[in-house]
Image (cartoon, rainbow, N blue to C red; front, top):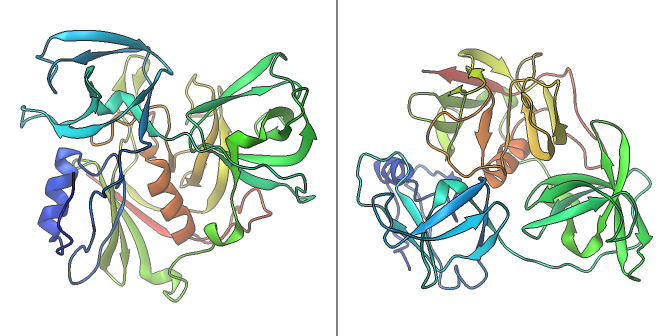
Amino acid sequence: MTADKAAFSRRDFLKLSGLGLLGLFVPNMPLRAAGFPLNLFFEDAFDSQQGRITSRLIWLYDKPSFNGNRVKMYWRDSVLSITNVTVSEDVSDYNRIWYEIGNEGFAYSGTMQPVRTLLVVPVNNISATGALGEVSVPFTDAHERADAGAPVAYRMYYETVHWIMSAAAGSDGKIWYQVLDDKWNKLYYAPGEHIRLLPDDELAPLSTEIPGADKKIQVRLNDQLLFAYENDSPVFATRTATGAVLRSGTYTTPTGLFMTYHKRPTRHMAAGDITASGYDLPGVPWVMYITESGISLHGTYWHNDFGRPKSHGCVNLSPSAAKWLFRWTSPVVKPNEQFAYKTKGTLVEIVN
């Protein structure tokens, strides 16, 4: 599945956003004054692309539609190979993207996190201040000891981010990483080959030549879109999932003007946080708080259903979109720092 490299217009981008076509490989798109030069898909896109089931269960259908016949069921955390992306027949759907799962059938994209299995070579020399690590496999378990047979504390998912405090020899003779639970200040262990340490240049600030006062984020609740502006020109856009009416209550994303005054590259959001609201979510990546009550922009791994309200008040983003914004906004969080707090941030405007 390929696409022409010709420039996209802003209308083209919004059309693709409305269809959900940016959700798998292009969760964010840099915008340029002359258009949107982008090779939307690439030849080897599906060679290693997988999807992890994020809901309790899903059905595969014989066509990309909930009106199709159910052909097979999978449970949460099943990992399937995605062999193609297609669009549903219902033009009224906010997310028309379905994933083709080989010859088995079609899965709705909103309940499947795009993942890959990328084993890495772990290292022994971890900085005394710790290092940021990103899970590079669909999921891995954090144990109480460096032993696969030890009790499991948490399951850590693809593209979640964690503080790695040290390396240890596991009972299997391999390198395990000591992982900090930043919510409860506890230490656990996970296989080192499942966690990619993030180099400093991958965390470096973006667009540093642009004064902070000339940067702005706008979140459009009705459209479920986020735009980043430099000097009033859009340079970045992505789909969102904001506050919704859920079974547990009504959660609104506030409108108005805010600042990204408090940033963390990772946060364990758990009971007691307004952002968690009963959930237990370790390793939420690229968190940018905009209110004292805990409303933030952050990466999301527990669903892939962007384009409609779905959160407990926060602005849910794909992990890669949140990472771009984290690097682009102020204050800057240095690689060896766990957070930056109570300093001037980037303007965030939330409108209906």
